[in-house]
Length: 91
Image (cartoon, rainbow, N blue to C red; front, side):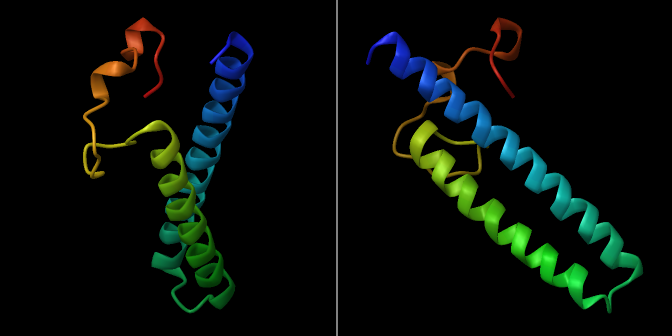
């Protein structure tokens, strides 16, 4: 893999992580809203839609870049391959 491919891969990785963060935020906020308005069908629909998108995106990310958490089954233990947060890595 050349430098351009690594850079493209890093950009895709960062973009996917940002989308995962955004979807997680939306799912949590909608869940909190639904705690007070459980009969809001639109909010429930959005919560389910965002939760599905989040699950699909996390699965895709983990297949491409490795586990997001220690709860993800994996074929190879990859935690030590990434830089730690103080080394410029993401968490």
